Image (cartoon, rainbow, N blue to C red; front, side, top):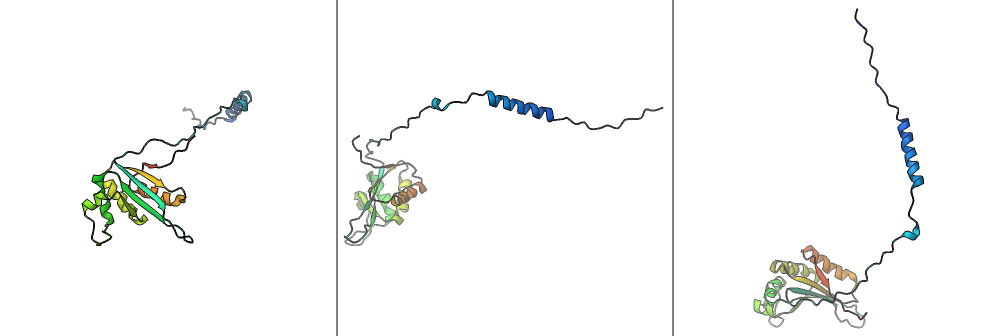
Length: 180
């Protein structure tokens, strides 16, 4: 005669004792832990900011001067941007997108005349093309922003954004050092 097979029943593990042990351990560690008192806090001294007194290089630098034009007594001054390249050999190629003309004759300036121009006046809309030409001409150019302290930050921010948009992400802000 064959044996009758018993039906298998699934088994269940009771998790209640394990949860109880977990809470007991948590309570034990919370009650026995020693918390750091307030008097043990470490004091952090932040560095004092000082202006960089390094002199700007004489070659491979472009100085962007943002100034206020003198105004009549009842007018608001206009903002001017001057772009000057220190390296003679780069000037003609960089100033070429501006299509500068001779003020007397109106004829376009040739490369020799462009090379002699140390500084040109720009409109904000022209700055993008000149920075792009400068980046194409000489990748190792450094940029310095020399701004009038009376300007609102928006003008300086526009110039910095134009530089960053064209890949010139490192530039100096020209400051005056004061006696400390």
